[in-house]
Picture (cartoon, rainbow, N blue to C red):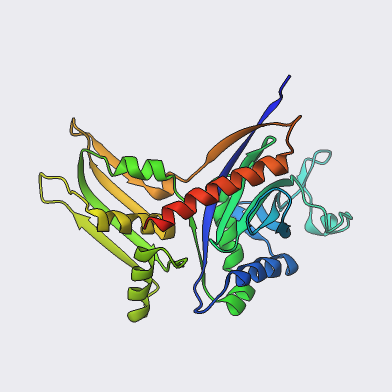
Amino acid sequence: MAREKKIQASALNIRLTTEGHRPEDYISLFKDILRWNLSAKIASREWGQIIQFHEESSYVDDWCYYGDILRFTTIDGWFDMDTQEQVAKNEVRSVSIPPNLRPNGQRLSFLFFPESHLFVFQTYAGKKRMGPSSCLRMIDGLLSNSRVIEKYGNVEVTLVPDRDELDSAFRIHMLETLRLTIFRPNPDGFAKTEQKILGRLNSVNASGVDTSYRSVKGEGMTPDDELRSEADVAARNGRVYIKGKDEEGHKQEYKTDDHPLNDSVFYDEEVELETQAFSNFAKKIKDKFAEWVSNA
């Protein structure tokens, strides 16, 4: 009898902003993060770090790297149940816990595609979880480390939104407000709109742009192809905000931050390894992302 298991995955668009960088520079970036043993805060006492990063050649017919994220908890204080008192810090220091051990550790995998600079990561696998926003905070924290900035400059990272949800938002009956925030894109040679926007940012020495559109009062906007392409670029490299009304006059609101890509796949663990299932799934996500970029 088949024993199907579920994997969910999201994606980050990671972009080096230095001129003349190559796909190999992304590999160097992740290898340095691993070598420097960097960790970053996720929330409260939750932290994360990359603990593995190597080229994948077993399951995916594409140039990519397989790695693991470790999510763990930091412990700030201890309580003695016998004395009913908080344990003093000097007493805790006398307890020998090996520095290589991490409490509440959860290990989730990712695939990174250097040419499209897309980071596809598990949000659920085998009862282990890490929400899209949690991973974004962790990766952004790692990329904001002073050692990373000193060597690689500013590195932008955006949570890839669910494209279907974005398309639905543009079908709001009366579209009243559209706000686009675009940080430096990293065009792959065929993304014409991204090349155009990046060229404009370079010409005025800007790191990003915010653009707002408002409809004529009592009427809805009708975005043309050019504006729709700019919104796609903003969705992949920043954020999109849409406000309007449905046919009955009820308020409708959309933010890309609230609708990240988080797709699912099921696999039979008696036939396929989790690593294989996730790798193939990540490749499909990457191909869909590349197609979206190429149509911009």
